[in-house]
Length: 315
Image (tube, helix red, strand yellow):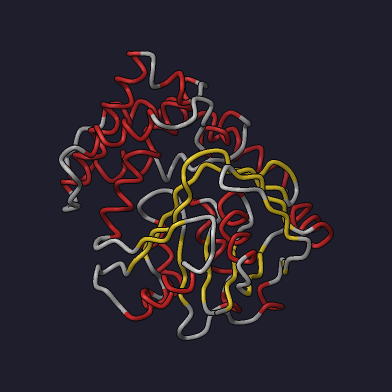
């Protein structure tokens, strides 16, 4: 099975690296100094699950040079889905599976509209990782896992085959739940509130969860996401908010979310795909989301400034 990892950042670098370490044929789609370092030095991963260094990896910035593959792991930022879909055409044949491992609840649907619904699975990943330097990934928290399935919810032979292939790698678990939609919304209930509250307060989870006022914000924001999911017909466990807070309590105290890190660094972020999506999806359903709306509005000026700067830098 030939696998392309489209985006070699914290997520793609970790899971693609583990797959390559296991002997899978993996090619990374990267660019800039990150690509240069991958070609020159290989891929280094520092991980709580065990460090490793791949001295040689396949990497390119030109999908046309790679050709068709069996699986594409899409690991770019959620706001880059359209750009990635336009670029990945040479990687696709009729039976190629595309597995988006992105934050938010809209990526698979957006991707399906651009490259065809028959190719796209629903998916998510769990871990805290980031790019520590060119071709250098650091995984600092959360036992890594890949979770995926058919978006229509039925078991299929192709999902079973992909699970068997991915499960050959060490360093992460693989799950194919009965409902991938429930799994995606369960993660969204965690990541969007933590990202928003973390970005507004500018502190890691160790402080968010111990200060009563910020813990209360998190709990209220999570409850709003649960209500939105219910209004959209997504079944979540009745105790999902309590479970999610328990998960947060078990994380290393210095953990931060990727959206939070991007906003604090002045980079474009996934604000529209996280806090913004909650507000946008809730509006036509009449679901009140005041905490998430406040987070979104508070962070929007910084987001617009970062995007204006990005446009200026590329013009």
